[in-house]
Length: 100
Image 1 (spheres, rainbow, N blue to C red):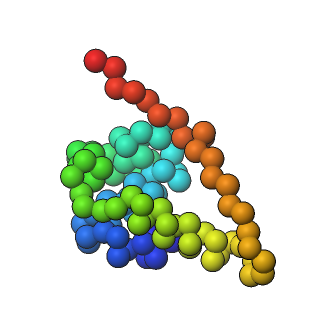
Image 2 (cartoon, one colour):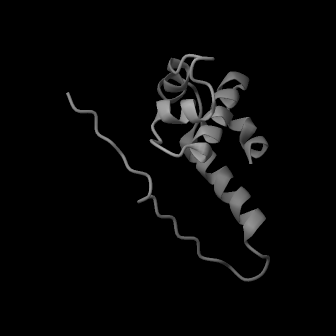
Image 3 (cartoon, helix red, strand yellow):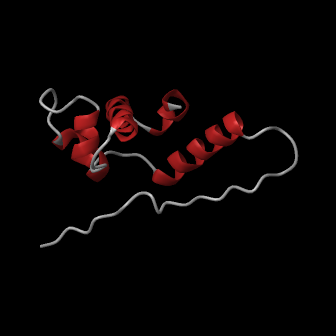
């Protein structure tokens, strides 16, 4: 999948994206940005601020990325034939509000 979405990112942002996706899939604990960075094996090798900058400063479009990923998933896993209904549920991804 990562190669199919490369055009959404700059080269440095794509490298960070693939690292974060590796960490997301490999994380056994917290799926925070720092947790994904650590699960990708980058803790101590590259500062986690790089991952945080990806979300706060990198230029990429979440809607474009989401549509590309959806098309890749459908193309790979949905058999050809009549129209299919796709339902998305994000309840497994817990969100944490920052407490001041």
